[in-house]
Amino acid sequence: MALTAEQEAIVLQIITAFQNGKRLNELPGIGDANPLDLIVEVLGTDGESKQSKIAALLPYLEEQCAYGIEFDTAVSSPVCTRIGNLSFHQSLPIQNRMKGCLLNDSGNVVEYLHPTNWNAHVLDGSRGQVMVEIPAHYRKFETEGTIRRAKISELPLPGYHAVPKQYMSAFEAIFERSTGKLCSVVNMGVDYRGGNNQTDWDGTYRSVLGRPTTARSRPQFRAAARLRGAGTQWNCCLYNTYKDVAWLYYIEYANRNSQAAFNAQKDSNGYAQGGLGNGVTNVASGDWNTFNGYYPFIPCGHTNSLGNASGEVAYNLPTEFPGTLRTVYANRYRGIENPFGHVWHWSDGINIEIKTDVDGGTSNVYVCGDPAKFSDSGYAGYEMRGLNARTEGYTKEMLMGELGEIIPAVVGGGSTTYWCDYYYTNIANALRGVLLGGSANHGASAGLGYVSSHDSPSYANTYVGSRLCFLPA
Image (cartoon, rainbow, N blue to C red; front, side):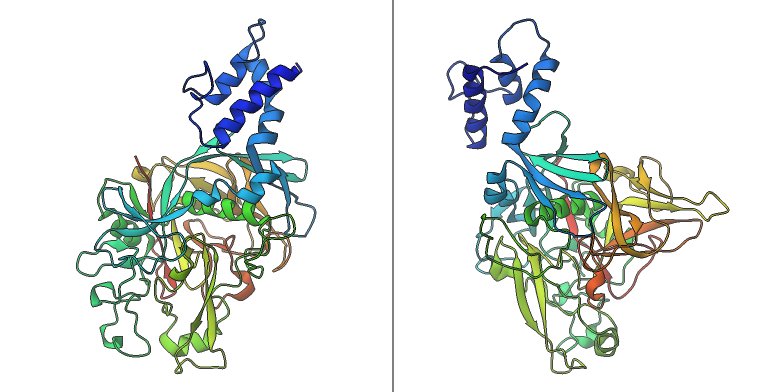
């Protein structure tokens, strides 16, 4: 059915009111209700079903209320085409609601941080954990032949699934030594000694004070996060939360190469361009090993002068660092420091079931959205989302599916083609966890889509850390 000019004007008025943050009851006779239901109502009562009215409105609603990207899996360029309401690619209404805050252990926001510089705030943990609020929104993924689309909206459009409000740590996580709690703080005190708690390094060039904690397994990171309280709402780096942040980046920059050079300037259309830069990924492996045995070396909060913005900040390596490299660049995505690189991040809520060729020859991806059901030994309470790639290599296709899984399904790409990030795995009859992002010596392999399913959840190493996440009830 086609809209009349009068109906289209009313529909547009409702949509505009919603987009401008009004409560809709400012429109005569509408009241405070679901805007989609209201739009159906204004089409009249001519006997047509609500479903058919929504179907008629859907293309119009998506064009006005959603924005996203599309790309062709047969085309090697990582650059995507922007789709939907192109003005939203300029204003970025969802991404621009990401903001830094202090969150207490009950999950309440103590204060929001200054949007352009966090350094004036007390970030030492005494007033709460330093987190980035990720706003609630709605998302949809589409497959049409070799075409893939990802769309987001502030409206609950038909076919879109809800992405809840949630919090990710602004920094790579540290253990508070006196309590064992996982933290997101800027604190150089001995209670926040990162790495593997090397006390004899205090006051030396290898000091891990204020650096993220590493050399812990996934169960250890999970247990430390849960010590913050609030049942199972506090967690270490959640795969689903990381995935949600990754898609906000991909849609904002329309570029699957997250290591593309950072450019603070918008392009001629007013769109974000480039990527997040290399991050802390270009350190020579042997030099890092000689320096401190692959332990973290960037202090948490180094990029706080950027506030809620994205960008990169130079970090001058100690003179004792071997080799010729003197400066690295810590990057930031909308308040989230080192979203990839520096150290790997253990993720939770995802398990990979790998079987040898003799025993079935599949690598099955299982995801769980209920932290109370997280397991390191099985898949009860998890949903199978598809099949994982069986060999390592640069990712050519992600699993995606209807929920947008960023787990490699096909390899065969390159460092500047397709997804531009690497994938590690091995074949054994085993349950494997998922490491994300890569570490300081991984170079072009690293990025938001860099994934390893090589290790069991018990794996711990000097260059493996995690983050802190919180899910409101």
